Image (cartoon, rainbow, N blue to C red; front, side, top):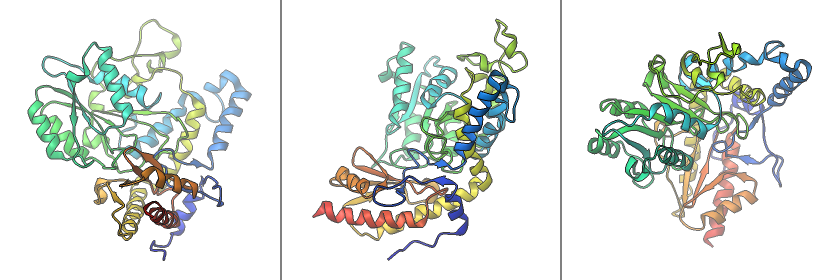
Length: 414
């Protein structure tokens, strides 16, 4: 019996704006992996082709001529991103990729002084975050073991009481909190306003990795007074494999003279092309830009963001909550002890993903799903992550997943 509510016409039409991968044994795969790589919007090909044709037709003149001059191509993209993450237009910049941007903003916002020298990470942060912070500290000649504190989860969930106790013990030693806004392993959406308030009481800077949060959950970075954030655009934002990263720097820091790695695209546009020996910082977050941006990559991202803005994050978030709740309810009806849902049940504490901890033969179960054209992903230890993305997943995707998942559980337990 299909226990999922009927698809609305609105979301069926929205799904048609995306290319759904083919399955080996069905016309379309059941794609529930947008937390890892979002799907391609149908208008991506034409937008990218238009940029390539402009390059061929105009050559270098395309920077300032044509229907979409490249010199200002990022303006609309950054404005749209601002709407999606709750930021002012001058607080968002599109540049580089995620981990490189972590290094750039650590250069500016990690300023060890006196006793304040420690960085707090979530113990289950995405590995690249840890690699970046550890290597950055080593680059400064600092011992990571002496300069990193870990916010430890209890049974995969991070509790504010534990963070409060950690900061109380080390409040005079902590310079920076660098946390994932939404934990990649459990799917837990952290209480960012409460974290910022807690940190500000002790004068601690708050930076966020929003790779799994941007385009997934409601964000209000400006209103929450987050100091800085980084995020990628290839997951929920559907920018394409390896697409550009983005950074957020709150307006309250725009007049501050930060230590910063600089390049010519961060120079003010008023004299950027005069090639002067002295660097003139562009206003706001634009000063962190380094190089001439890859316009072809931006064209891919532009298409998806236009769909987000057209629908609106409030509507998308409501749809996400409904889909994820339906998936959770159906999984609970399986009434088995072979797996458990790690992700919090409260809609305010999660986004469009459920992490399923399979208690035996998790990899075998994942392989069975893959063989049946169910596209999810597997993370150690025996965690299968399932993402019902509201822009292109329908109730029928969830029904097919639950049917195959239930069959797979019977097979591996036989």
